[in-house]
Image (cartoon, rainbow, N blue to C red; front, top):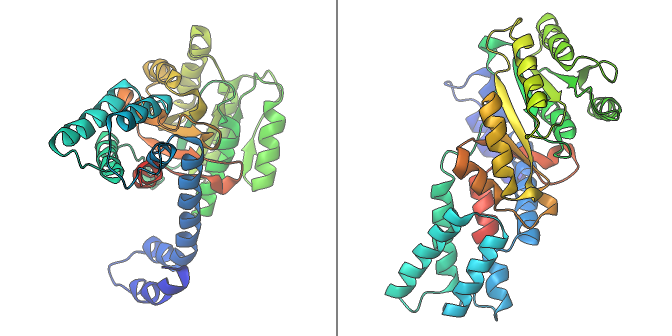
Length: 342
């Protein structure tokens, strides 16, 4: 169905008496939203399929067996592929056990049947993994702190989230709290200018907590809905740097006792299961409320987010599959499982 086909449906739906103003606005823009999300999900699936060992690739390597009967060799190759994609021992074992149990009952089991089983397991494992963010007007502004190690893509992610919020009709402001990295200010200034997002920043070496305070204060004074704080990258093994994250929290709480309302860890998807310990340490230090998985366009370890979610049960709010602002989108379990097992 194209966005053009949806126009009559939209015209009728937006007149419904039970809809509020925001609902009507969302429905009015649905053809464009449908087209944008459809394009993203297609790109998401293509990206995962290109880089991660999927069922189609596995069975294709052994003679196009996706529609043919399974055998022991195919199951062994499937096991190897699932491990190389970094699904983790637990999830890989669960998928294989269910496939082998069905295979023992029915030797006519085909590749597409195995894919269906794998998809069902993954949907079960990822139940509750989709984080859905909508600013809460009752605590305006909401404060989102982005955390993570150097190189995860926090700065670009912060700018893209602020841009996305603005695209959705919210007023957002960026806080350049990465005052440790010399190039950080230049980078976030460039992104803020490019995406037309308001920015609060200071000079290199300034107190990061003071910048966070100034950002939240500016958001309160100017009526912003959301303040997005880009914090400095830090190794999760460095205790004194983790303490600085806690300091940012204490300082912004002078303005709002509940801030930061969201503490999202930005994770480089190419790190695979190595991300789990990183996420665990950050979670213990500051109490993570969400994850953003970046760089899925450049990794064969597309299963890593499953291991992280399974270990910590922290929802994944966004995934990144490219450099463009629109390449950061809400995580969809359906699109993810379809890419791997569809």
